[in-house]
Image 1 (cartoon, rainbow over the protein chains, first blue to last red):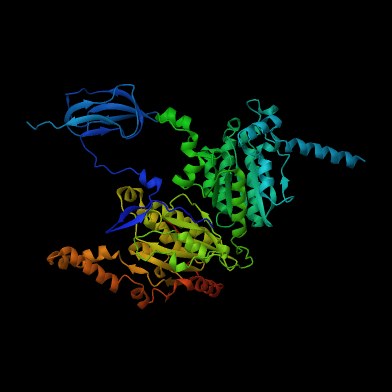
Image 2 (image 1 turned 180 degrees about the vertical axis):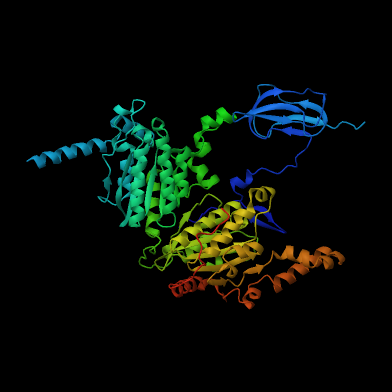
Length: 113
Length: 514
């Protein structure tokens, strides 16, 4: 028998339409919030090393063309252009070790002629 | 006279093996704050009850200079003994002998004692303290692990299997504990991971300490791999003794019944729970009010604390408790809570332990992370486990029972034998606010004072539906009871369930949503 004597701090916690007084767990507090993926941001899907960058800032790259090679788990992953767009900014350099979900390349739309 | 000489020679041989890796290695083990494998076994088992086998087993590796290496006991101690009178089989890896590394003969000693436990129908306890596979033995070590995993699986649900992590347990080695019923860990001593910090850093560039990656606390609180967490080895060994005395020796027996005792908990049971369904309380107090001497051995206390599971005795008999905990995350069901409860329910069912479910839950945890983590698949495990169980299943609805959670928490519809509800119970498809918003949407929107109308409709819904009597009128609840009657009624329910005989259609095995 070891009921806690001190009163813990309770916070408001909404489950559907009602808010309950309760405590949050560490795991719950540390959970990752969902962010809508932005198609103009190319992020690393796995931690790894940048082996090669095949595009430069300002350049318009066609869909399917290689952007960079991200080596992870001894595999060379070729990251391709998801759709035709202009390279706005490249945030990584060859040799960089990037964690997962790093913003590597930012794109911007090209006006259809 | 020669026999005397032989006896002396035997004693000498035994003394050498009992020294394990020798004084220096034992000193090192002590410096790490660890007991030796032999000390652990002797501290865990009843005095003078331990008998060791296979002391003189030797490895057969001839490569890499191993032919000249003598490894006492091949780095593992195996034997039989008793814990509070209960017979058990045990093995303990000896870190002082080549880092407790696992070679084929080391593994064969373990599988031999496991086979023995399975045949003799007694619990098997494994104490893990090993650097991993003995690299010199190559595939032999892998074969050894595989043979252990196979036996863990064969013994699952037949005899209780307990793993104690008192040192490193890395790589393939972790899967034996993962296959067993209960895993014990100790702060600063236990380390479990598939790939260690070095590999993770080399391959992925992520820097993390052993403790943060797979220390005791991580497995007790974050991963749920561990069931019992202790601050010292002695505390851990005491937890094992308590657990062993509460569970049966095999699936063919019931846990030993002891002298019945009254609960010690003095608070009036009806005063534990605030009537406002939004206010929290510690559901363990309700358990204390029900169990003999108010004793309760909580399992996985730190992981998914929004559901409480564990063992207590009622009238001397072991009962498995499953209770929503409003003190954490309002007592919702989520991936981890469902996973935790489902495995526990299956353990109780396999080992003839009746299950008492105490329900007070607002529903499932909303969130993208939950949906994407597979709350559908994990939640289904609980439905499966309750439906499948044939041990006596009793539910007491303390306060809220909403929606899918009402079904999941051992409802009549999943085969509960006894359904009791306290008079303040709210059994409904959802909380009154949500329900009123949907049902009376038009009336609320058309009202001059929307908020006043909403409150009126919520109140109406509470009076008409958020109570136990609708469910009772349909026979889904057997009895609406006063809180003070709970222990007496549960004891009665257990008494009349003694000969419960419930069959399932023939199958090789089910296909639960693992």
